[in-house]
Length: 205
Image (cartoon, rainbow, N blue to C red; front, top):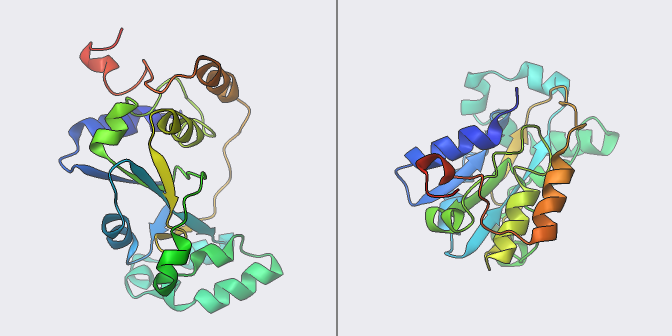
């Protein structure tokens, strides 16, 4: 089944670093991906990047060797043209534009679960990921964004700085009770979930 929130909390508990970067297993980071997250990190701020969605044909052509040799970065103009034709979606988000850094890093609320970073201390302020979410959508990003906002943690975009390439795959079903869980959180205005990092250690009832 889908156990992303549970396994991410387990990973956070074992993390040796004071700063945490989250990606999905179906995403390939740009060669400067980690550099941009680390360079722009701030206490009290979540950094949120975006991703370009590759087509099935391009995804099937990829090999580890091609990726190491910069195949994805070198062919961005091709991806943009394929974006115009509709073969690739969000192609413009695959552009790496470090010279527009000050313009790009505007505060905005659009956290993407596949591409964000946060300090260890800030994530513990909201008790990490809510483990009641057992399916995709809302639980790994929108819920984090909402609870972080209640705790006074801001979100800053690093779109076109921390770039990702998302491999094509069949989407999992979005028919689940995630929105009911999220509405309960919003109704009660809960920033520190009782179902997160500290529950396993017996510190939250």
